[in-house]
Structures are given as structure tokens and as C-alpha cells.
Amino acid sequence: MSFQSILSTEIEMLDDSDEEKESNRDLLLVCVLAGEYLSAKKERTTFYVKERIEWEKHIQQQAEEVPEAFLKLYRIEYSSFMKLCAIISPKILVKDEMARRRTGKDGISIEIMLHCLLRWLSGGSYLDIRLSAVISPVHFYTSVYKCIDAILESEDLAYKFPNTEKELDDAAQGF
Image (tube, rainbow, N blue to C red; front, side):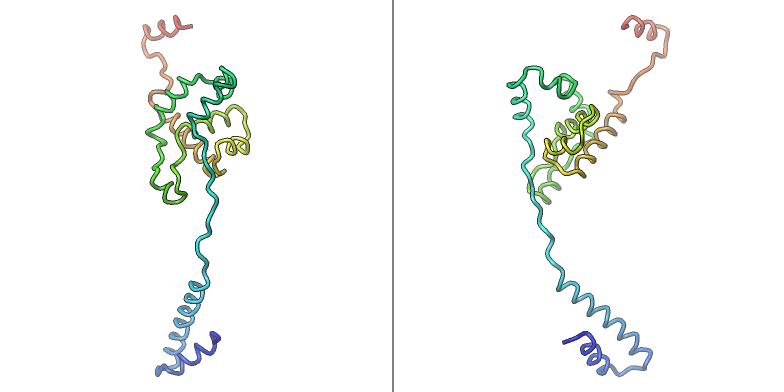
């Protein structure tokens, strides 16, 4: 049955003035179109969820291949990397519950986010980095900017200029 025949039948059944019939016809048309749209609407499309890298296994494999691999790859000592993760983690912590609802997997770890930032800042292409981290382009950039914001907002990482003569002398002695 077509829209026109449904509308004609319904409008004939209405016992109203011409103006009210026109208004009711418009409302009925909207309802019928909405019903058609909802009945024809497909289910949400599914998507492919890849397995993310296991950070500890990744680090262990690098250490087995070349002892200084982490330092060469990230240009930072592993202990400093983990300290940086601890400093920025309160700012960038991702709720795993929301990630599990959507993908069935845990959210992106802080280590993976920092991995993306450091590799990107050292000149890596986001295409290669996101493939090695097994994350989407959107999550790559979200991770990078979350880490940058967390580092810039961190009081522990803020540069402190000498305020007194003694602090200035201490800083000079450090050089």
C-alpha cells in the first residue's frame, strides 16, 4: 500500500474542517515517514576489533632483541618512561568500562598512549605508529593530545625558575 493511499484513507476518516484536515495530513505524513524510516533502518554496523599490543610483552621482546632498544626507540630510559606514565596517569586515565561496552576490550593503556606521543614527537608517522599500537587514527590523535595536555598541566613537570639568589647559585652549580 502506498503512502498516498494510506493518507487518503486516513484523511477521509477525519471529520474536520479543511484547515484541520491539512494539519492532520501533515502530521500523519510525518508519522508514516518516520515509521517507514525506522522499519527500514538497519542495525548498527559491527566493526572489527583488533588485539592491542601487550605492553610488557612488547618491552620484553625489545630487550631480548637489543639491550638498548627501548632507549633507541623512545629516546628515554625505561625507568623515566614509567615515571612519566605515573605522573600523567591521573589526567589521562581511560575508563575501561566504556571501552568494554563498545569493543569488548579494555581501553588504551597509558603506556600505549605515551608510546604514541613519544614516537610521534621523535618524527614517526602516525600511520606506522598507530599500526604498531593497533589503534585507530582517531584514538591515536586523542591519545597524543591527552598526553600533551597532561604533561603541560603537570606541576611535577613544570619548569621552575630560580626566585632567590641562593636558588640561582644552586642552578648555576648544576651546570
